[in-house]
Length: 208
Image 1 (cartoon, rainbow, N blue to C red):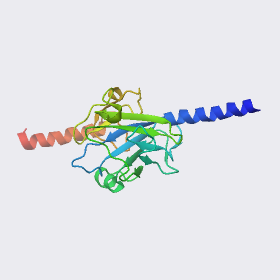
Image 2 (cartoon, rainbow, N blue to C red):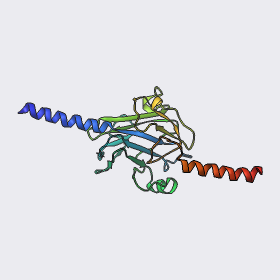
Image 3 (cartoon, rainbow, N blue to C red):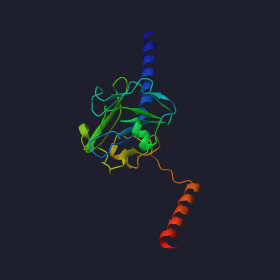
Image 4 (cartoon, one colour):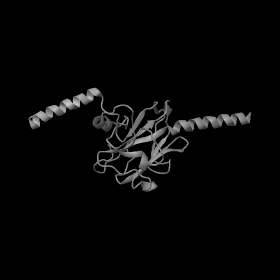
């Protein structure tokens, strides 16, 4: 009987780990002017086909899970879904137009312009994912994602792509909070509108 209980316990833990490993730090926006961090945010992505409960998990800029922000109980990410953690929900709504899929962490987190290491831990304090950029913070510059220009973010593409090497997995991107980082190209109708706008501007400025 004990043997079967042990096997059952192992399977539950193993399945939970597999589910957790589908959650990645997908995008980080840290390039803000001044010393404030009210416009900073981080995006998580669920690369699985099931909803995952991440309540009680932690986001930390330290190798210790005891520091940082504890994700509120009942927080979930839907299948192939995104969830943004931001310093301010108001800023996310006003500047980025993202009103849903946002959790506010206030002043519990802050990302350095020079470099940082960001860690995601589950309820058992097991590290699920980590990314470091620039000087890499406590992780150092080895395998760190390159620092990006003001107004840009570091992002995985395709979403959820993870080789445990941020220098390969992350690149400079236009920020896309709560949306896919992968650009799939313009639709036929959008491309038609772009050509029409260009044609109008061309006639106005060049008389052709």
